Image 1 (tube, helix red, strand yellow):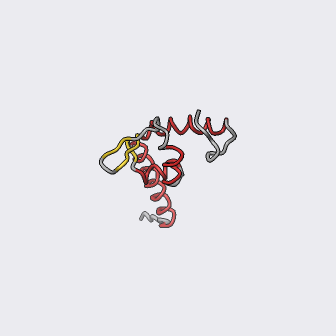
Image 2: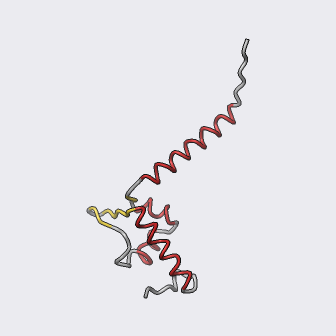
Image 3: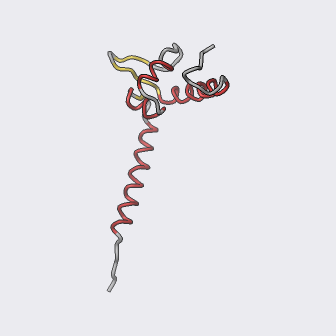
Length: 99
């Protein structure tokens, strides 16, 4: 006779980890971000985004009616450049002035 013991707590942890990994994969496959997703993606409030990023005409965004859409890959590239520019000018976003 074969006996199988299942640790339900361990099984639950494995399941949650697999679901989280899949959600991360799905998020990475998303082409456009909406405003809420953008806030989460770059870790800034909507007020900070509009004040410090969207005031730049080169910030990658398009409008769909009253909604803004942001291409994930272009935002990522923009933020890498923006990060370096802010760091090079003293590291304070509030004090940073675009050239």
